[in-house]
Amino acid sequence: MKPRISTLPPWTMAVAAMLSIQFANALSVGVLREVGPAGTAWLRMCFGVLFLWMIARPAIRTIRRKDIPSLITLGVVTGFMTTFFLGAVERIDLGTAVAIEFLGPLAVAGIMSKNRAALLWPGLALLGVVLLTEPWAGKIDLVGVGLALLSGACWGLYNVYTQRVGDRFSGISGLSLTIPIAAIATAPVGLPQVIHGNLTWWVLPAVAGIALITPVIAFGLEMLALRRMNHTAFGTLLSIEPAFGVLMGLLVLGQAPSVPQVLGIAIVVTAGAAAQRGAARSEPQGPEEIIEHPTSERG
Image 1 (cartoon, helix red, strand yellow):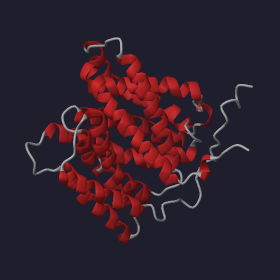
Image 2 (cartoon, helix red, strand yellow):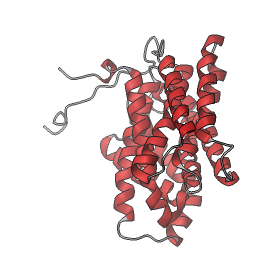
Image 3 (tube, rainbow, N blue to C red):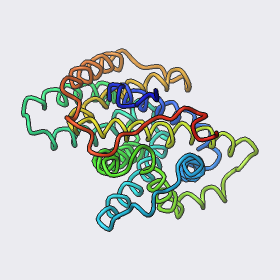
């Protein structure tokens, strides 16, 4: 009997995706020092296309005319979400950048909610984001904050359009269509940084490994999770992600959180856990995705 990914609670896929994304972002810090944030983002998208097309052929024949705007929008915001975020991480701590970026999906969570009581949890998460950001401590890098906010705007749109595309295309077939668009969209800013950067021998293998984590695995998990969760539940669950950013910043980059940030982590985790109640969509809107055994297509 073939295991179905639909048997997994959707929040577990979302949490796994968040951990993967922040781990990949932490690993990207060394690469962006060599080829810049835009160059790193563009290379990640290019390797993502390579891996995705090895796994799933783009379902071009299944595209309908009304699908094109959603596919293009998702591709563009995916590329620039990564580009802006890595630009922010170049200037401010990983956990702080994630906390500021989170304001994007947090806004979507509030706007899309039809239940006023659900706004309690985004409001609580916002308090945690403020504590994680620590705007009262030291000099604020306004460029870094601005880039994180731009990434957050893209992140909010990404959540909306990921659900739309995920409802139309099974599994990662939607990614195999949108990540090439992300690579094309970010090429004008990413390619010049790669050409003029320090493309040492280890950069390409490192980016390839990072790309396998995200966009391939992490974005695929997010797309599957969003097929079975509403915007409010998913957006508020993402309040855990600043905590993951702080954790990866500590473990990978040695960026230790302060006492207020630890308190902020506790607050956003509480809000995220509360948001899981009633998180499942009644029925997935697209075809069920089946995880094949590794030997199923190799004879």
